[in-house]
Length: 253
Image (tube, rainbow, N blue to C red):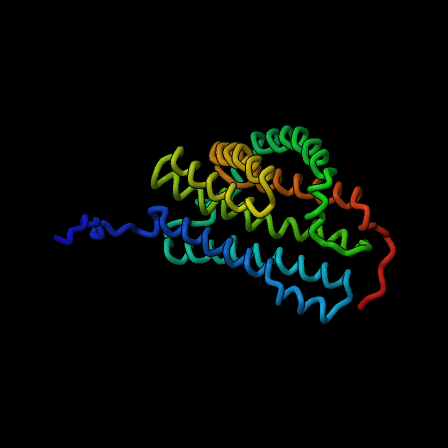
């Protein structure tokens, strides 16, 4: 006889039960990934602008897409569907009681991670992907937009992983399961960047989750991640044999 086990579909979870944040993380990253890796979109920029300008505009666009798809849109969805929760609940707050903790940890982690990031950024396998803007000649505009683009992107990124995908899950499932889900998804997003970054993302993700919960906000994770990205990007710029920086502006396309 054809039999099957009955599933408890009568157990309908609320959006606040951690379901929505997980799916929002999936959707947000998928949207970012396929737009940032779209050859058609990339070809559009290269058909309209010269090589260096195309790279700048294309990468800068992807940073904003990441901010919107992984940060702003999921946040707006949750604020709309869970009106009893505010920005502070998702880690967007400034707590006087943990201000010194945030400051000390940012300085300490920066002192440790900047040398490590700079050392790794020099490696040939890192120079294959970084700096992301593959313009042959960087000017002041490219330099500044590169830095600002990382700030925009990583704010959305950390809002997702250390805010939207952490605090609601801790409330729903407890700290250890919430961190396990967070680290698993966080590490998985680094798979396209290679084995080293994927493995390294696990302990870093775990540490940032712990510090975020101790601080009650996302600022340590955000600031540390920006510092690492800037260090990696600028070190790669310095050591890449085919990419050079000049303070003089290039001719506009």
